[in-house]
Length: 135
Image 1 (cartoon, rainbow, N blue to C red):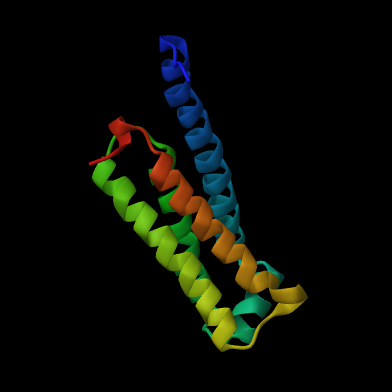
Image 2 (tube, rainbow, N blue to C red):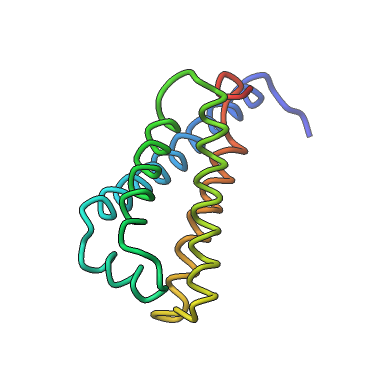
């Protein structure tokens, strides 16, 4: 197979588009979730009550999520981005584990699948990030 120069240049552009699609989807989901937790919506309060967490954890998690989502999309600060990726990964895997240990398998495991999906999006965004967003 012969690869032309135009084909080689097209790959990084596609990777960049994939990076931004995945990252913006992740950031939007995380920031909306964080805002819901900061507002202490009834569903969020019920959720933390069900897994025996104190309600004030919603404020802590909400702040972390909003700040992490902002860090992912803002330019510069590659070290901060690494911390944000790690934090989001720990938040999402911790959420899945917390629901699993509390036997909270609402709607065929939705409370397990959704945070693990966000963790996978987080890994994909990290793997696709351009060189100027790496340490």
